[in-house]
Length: 402
Image 1 (tube, rainbow, N blue to C red):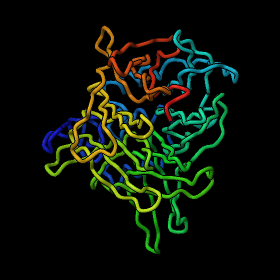
Image 2 (image 1 turned 90 degrees about the horizontal axis):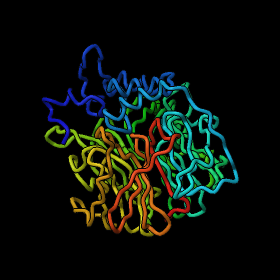
Image 3 (image 1 turned 45 degrees about the vertical axis):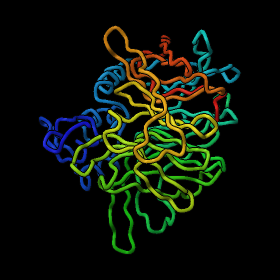
């Protein structure tokens, strides 16, 4: 657990601070119904978003210590990296700070192509997934510099943009006057429905009186219909019961699994695991692993043909593995990791994915490398590349096990 009610104002950088109304030096933390909603609808840039996250005024996808390093690196000049459609990619990696997704060859870990996601209105790409057709799915924290709104983008196996799914006013559209929200991840079920995680969203509905709500959850689209009005799945408003959705994936039965932040019954703030059963028909929320299970939320990935759930803890640098379906308070059958740190004790694995045989896992690390694990032996190495110096937020093998 991160902090008790009496101490939680000191947990800068977590959603707890965002919603606690705390004062941190000269910074006044936003309230859930006032300034926070305004920030979601305000003009921003990737740099400004990082600054707001560092101040604790908006939630962040990584722990505070890693966020500080990310802010420093974003001040470096943005490099030019080239796109090569014919390149043979083994691992995709997201350069969150400089808005690239890098295609790597293996085992020499050479950058053979780079997708400039900013050219496609994707800023701060984080979690990556590769589907059974080797299409690449990218969770983008921002879609533009004119608002705090995310987007999910689908790229072909060569790295060419195919479709994008933009969170917006959900159906019935007539009741929604405004919507803004951002997240870090996405998922795809066997029917092709596309899901976007929303760490935080703000929606104004009028029926006919108008009400503004700050919440967390998901939006989803029918297969192949990015222009359709999305459906909204809320997991709570104003931290009841969940403050923010972290990372997500979809199991073989079409259910959503996700890490989250929130408060327990004794006002302790922390991170847990949730499930949304039947998300496209009758969504039902279950708190599976209680608040305090993880030190900080991290990537979620369903492997083994939809039968194994993998949950990454960024602070502990471990991956807890569960047999699906997971019963509440169940213990993992295996824990992978910890991933490595450098000579200065730096290491922050954010999100990753398995290879086609489920024998290896690649994870993007904000330290500036890929964490590569051999599953059976639980053996870990880290591989650096000159193009990784600003840190990585996600990684995915291609072909994957999806």
